[in-house]
Figure 1 (cartoon, rainbow, N blue to C red):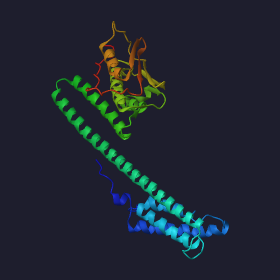
Figure 2: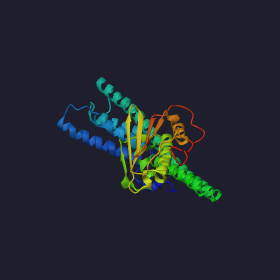
Figure 3: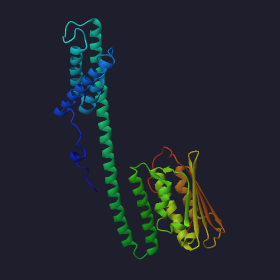
Figure 4: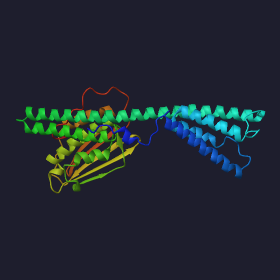
Length: 335
């Protein structure tokens, strides 16, 4: 896993709060404010004395911290006191109105410094927490890949005499890893249903697969469950359904309305499909996997091919996470 970026190289432009550079920046900002106030005085003689110095206090605090912000307020107040308050080029005596204006400037500047410094610290804390969260997600993803690789090695060794079972377990683990990668890239926010379908159907001829539907983001838990179900549907289609025949076609449509995801899986052009005499064990397991999302599944074994409809709630109910993953259906949905 790539280590954290070098902070010196990543933030060469940053100014350390409270440093000499921060105070130098505060003085520069006050100088710019004074020059701007002097220039605007020719255009608007009645301009308030402290108008251009408030932004200087704001940016000095934002970039340099509370100390440089207070220094900018003090220096700006002295400049205005000396040049723009009567008597000019003298500090005393001040008129009552100018005393109020000067006091108002210092009080307003103190509020600006406090609020801006609080915002700066809060922003820095949130940025640090976000960086830590990203680092933690990357580290967990890295460890998960190592664990899955270890599990796959153990499964391949222990089930070396049972190639069919070994392939099914390996395929399920690969399906989980594919969606885990999608969720990791979105920083744990979930994955779009289109990306999940593309990842699961990538090993097959995509020219025979049509996918249509709006952009729909699934939560991590729903995304993993959907990946397992799609993986089983694709495996069954490749062994017994439309994807097992060169002329077979697969169409997947989904819609997002009323807070529910409705997905329809339609196979055509494959071997003839015979409806089962009773509801198959695989179909019951599909329904069980979707129970936690208030979902349901309807499998129709039409003569032209399997038609499977999935209906789930997109927003997960607040409940304890299940202690185990949903069970995998057997090799045939209608078995």
